[in-house]
Image (cartoon, rainbow, N blue to C red):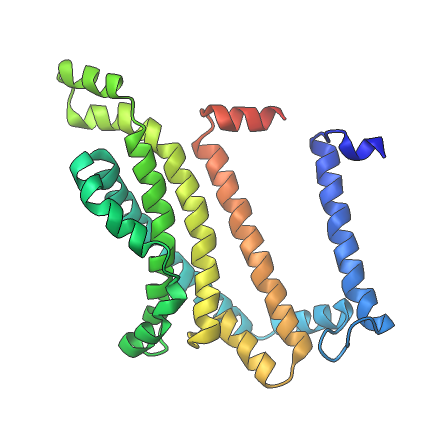
Length: 265
């Protein structure tokens, strides 16, 4: 079994990942057919795929997908904007950091789902209710990362720019941004995933239009295969978001040492 402990190269890792997915899909198909799991509650993969194909042919599915992506995009955009501005202020100004540290540590651990009653009370079951959950959950990822990046700016480089009386715009672009950008990109990647999770959660619990609401409707109507098909769609959506953000990260940070090391593996 020595090969289990041997580091895999990029091609071997890719094939290992494919093999893992294939084994998982085979289990989804075989276990219900053999009676290992109840097919009424967990239908075989072939039925789920058939239900997915049927769903793809309906305008309701594409409308729900568009609603989910719209809610996710708006919530993510607002979270990133707030997180970047607040993170730069908190990380770049020590006095602000001292005044806000305790408040942030108190508010950050509160799960956003705890605000569902308040969101419904304020906005009903509309998109704004789910946006409240998304913004509260996703803004912390961006704020904390940008704050760390602002604190990590080289004080020697900053003082040198100040002593030479470089314009503030020059200092921002050439000193602050190169340091903060890797942190901000990491925060964006984390916020994108969290925002999608909360978008689906809001649709599931609050009833905001989207894929989550379709899942609830399928579950309540007994369309189990269709329900699992929609769950698979949310999984593929999450995977697509992660892949796209990773590609953006490599493009934006192509000059950064971490990206160059990753490309050499």
